[in-house]
Image (cartoon, rainbow, N blue to C red; front, top):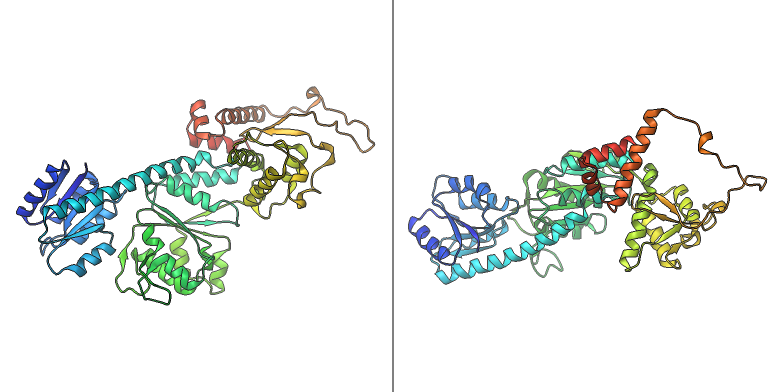
Length: 485
């Protein structure tokens, strides 16, 4: 049964509807005016709100109750009550997010039917919320790979802004993981139970992108054979991710600016706007400041989007993370095929480490994908990688096999060939006693860093679990990792 808020200015109607709902086993919170309902909405968090749109001449209206109820997290399901001949008002309420409407005078069976439909919808929403909860686990900060200082800075910023509704602009080259960070921002926010709706703004021509973002009415253009909800409406209560925002045309930039300012969306071919409760995360792989100078991007839109700017480092700027990423992809590609984690040769690993990585992390994932598809016995050799890597691996390592721990540490499985000097003789091996002694603080720092990495490895790469095992906060763990670099 559900918690239902009833807002109706007619006392007799309140009594009748309350008795019907309570007879069905629902908890009913009645109000005879809008002001009290608005004050109680956030405190009582009803699952369903039934409100008359006409609540008298003074005070908040039923539309005000509707908007506030839809702005809750998660949004309440709203059924509106209208008077005879108020069909147009009911349609407008539906555009503002009302689930359904009842027209006075209505029968008890109609009320029960509408409520049953609303509860069925609520169950679907709850199931979706469970699935999103599982997604949230996947996109926890501790599950994102990276211990380099540049990535630690990203993690700290994401932790600070995830709980806000501020607009975020992610900057970085293609393949740096901007959508991954956008999902982490969404699923670790109070909007995590709502939808996450991504769209690549460069993937569609202008007229189709406008329809995708804002929706359209039937007959508004050739091919519009039915009404269509836009992605902003689909993302209501959640987050919309606008990738490659710099490719958006000037007309759409103007429309997006209005959405950010007014929080209202107007479908193509429609004169009536509808309210949306959406957080916007945008991403760009090009400097928007230069696009502004060239006249290709609106300066006022830029300032609306650039509330929080978050630069994403390229892989060549965080090379110390490469073993971690390789380890992750070796495990994930094997898990996709139901196999034990792949291993990789030292020669192949060295080739990966010296490659310039113009395609950043996405290029690395593709290289491991190819290697795992072509390798024999779960062992990736240099020749299994793409051809442009073949000349990068040192012959001194041959095909010595290593296994990578979740923290990126290497373990030699097969004995490596002895290193030789230029004359072919065995190179001398430096004894630990002959190695130079550094400062004690550096030794302590290195030992602490190694101990943290060991804890992360034992936790299967889960930094949150590692932090609990070490008795420190996750933020402290990230800071100590950064200090150990």
